[in-house]
Image (cartoon, rainbow, N blue to C red):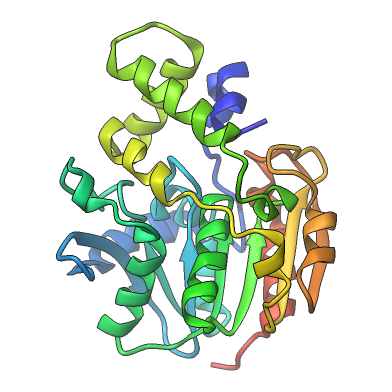
Length: 285
């Protein structure tokens, strides 16, 4: 079940409750707005991002129809990683949150979202020690490594072996249909779910619809060429994107950890942070 379809079942599930990860979430929400910056990406489009901390760089990539604030700040994940000794960078992906772009086809070249991350690292003169992505963010992390063969270590949350089938458009088609319903003013469950998400994150129908063009699956043959350490994590009730166990078997040097929760809630399992830190390593301040 997708995030959107999870919202359809009950809109209360769309609200992201804050995790009490060492009481960091409230502090994060209060402090991070002053850390927001933006830059002109590879094609001149404005991309907004959050940055704080010192140490090795962690790039955090949020899920589809979410934002850096909602996926990582309000859950306490951002501050937990800063507190562990990292320089944490979390963009609003193109078409999401405060990274709104022109509603024209030229704003969405192939791999635009992954290319934004390459441009962001160049803008900051930074090399990612690790990339932590959830759902759409995990797909973007895979595309980033495919394009650059960089990224240090990858932590992939909320994604399974659906990522290995580049011909599968079912989820994108379902998302696009619901967004089109919302644009037409239709009162459907899918349209209401996306409306709630847009209101919560400051996104737009046009932005999310455009972002679907960058929601790309990499394919099994290419995944088998990856030569960096990868950690895959999915919830025990997350069946949205195939099997995380199966994905970890496709990617060389990949490990799998099971979280508690559905596609919506698994990112809020404190184990997501603890397992990620064990995998990428904690640093001393």
